Length: 123
Length: 196
Image 1: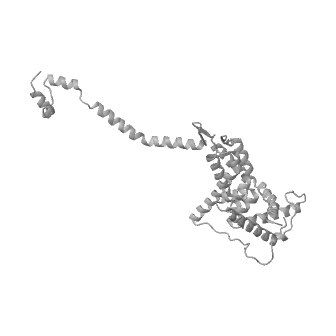
Image 2: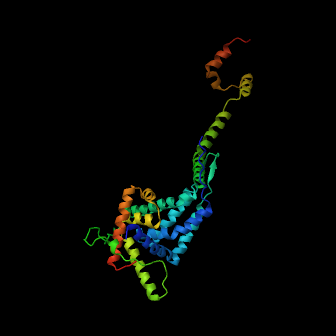
Image 3: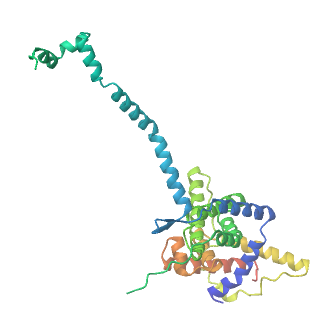
């Protein structure tokens, strides 16, 4: 008897051994199968070019969301600083009014350009 | 101009379900033969099923058997790696012995009977149950690579090239492992007085 014949005779015994798996194990195997099927995600076509499995796409989406959440505080900080810098800009109208009413702050006189401007003849 | 190659349709959830239902018990027995523990074997099969469903839903149904076997064998290897790290892996030495004892080819002398039928008499049923237990023990006692090659090639009916792919070795190695496994099994079963 050669190798293949021997294996062919052994196969039915192995098949029977598999079919006689205990009830508990069979139940657990079925539960494992159902759990796996639950994790199955329909393949998704990306721009009609490639097809990737749904799980991969979902993982990518989750990874992107996680990154986004990670950078959220940084973005918020930058936004807050930008808004603050915009609001801190001196109001030109207010300065003009102070200039006219002689209510300029002392800092205005320290400014060299302002002093030279004051020294300029009118017109 | 060549027509664009048509991709085979992807496996549907129903096809995946049918496939898993068809292979789950054999996969479980394969894992039991390898790790000698039902609970660990169940975990391995569950892990393999989950990985197949999660990561390979974009493959055609025809590719599922090969993919699943690769995942299953990797899961079994991972189990051994983890055990090795924990230092609890006890190697079960084969009691078959591979040396030539001058008795000739055991395959030549092994008697064969028709298997697969369920005998009516309790005595015969008991005899078959004992035979099955001895066969299982014999398969368990094979060295890891021999058992893997034998089961993939002759139980899962993969061809030599597919078996080599799953095992990550050459086709020549697969043939060698299969031959050694078959001879070792035949010798052991003959020594136990088992006729298939």
